[in-house]
Amino acid sequence: IYVTHFIEEVTSDFTHALLLTEGTVQCSGHIEDVLTSHHLSRLFNMPIKLYQHHQRFQIVRI
Image (tube, rainbow, N blue to C red):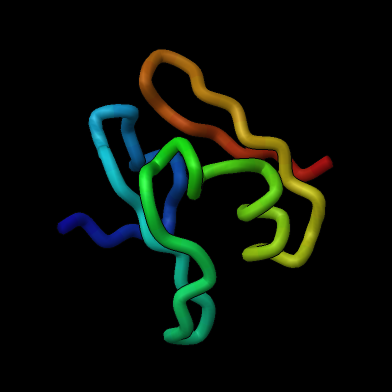
C-alpha cells in the first residue's frame, strides 16, 4: 500500500488505485481504469488531462 497526494509519485508499476475525497471512495480498481482524465477531473472538480511519460503520470489542467 502506498499513499500519496501527488499523482507524479504514481508509477506504471502500480496495479491498482483508489481515489478518495474527504474520506469517501470515489473510484477504485485496476490503475488503467481508475487513473483516467475523466475520474481525475471529477476528483479535482476541474477539467484535467492525464499524461503518462517514462512510466510516470502527469496531470494538466485544461
